[in-house]
Length: 320
Image (cartoon, rainbow, N blue to C red; front, side, top):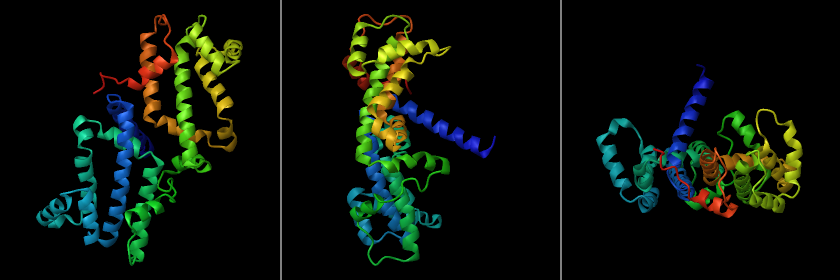
């Protein structure tokens, strides 16, 4: 097995492990914890920047760390005294302390990996990581008279290239993110997740090979006028695999995300949705429904609002 295949397998194993952990908790909790984790990682990267460039923990920084991580400084002093030959490990130990204490609730419940896996794929995390490495390099060459405060450092991090530390192929894939503001992208991602949920709700009915339930036909006509007729005429081109759902998603993209496609940042939406807890959970709920409805569609067919509500509440209680 080559190095590239080995790296892919490791990544896949990490994804599978994170996905399995995430399935057992509400997506809202995972989303909130992920944002909180990135907040803490920003603080960690700032503190680490100072510690690694100085080779020590300045008194003013120790006070800042103690304020946020009470007990860490004294614990680290004891550890350092007992393990003098280990070198300066305080920066690494701070990261471990945050995981063990701040995110103890997730660690004990067995889903800390899910938080970290999806957090590191966020642009805000990557910008902080880039700012850390660049800060250490810059400050070691020319020690600043005064290190930036955490707030000042965050402002610097916000300007960093979040793709700088990524592999070339991933960096190329994420160039589309530079074509849209984070706020505009967030709005588009939220909208796309909702449209994708609608398409998943329609999917069992579209692929059942029978007349659409009235509620599905009505909703499609209201939200996507003309699609039902278009889909019927295009079905003759389907061979072994039904394409109804894919046609609906293409229809949605062509009609409701025109600006993103024209300006070249539509792929940024797709990449973001793949890593969004709500988007992932919606897919998992569709898979659950698809399995349950394999023999026959439910009668009556649930409304989209009811289906969406259940998707948001869905957790896989069988996940470990």
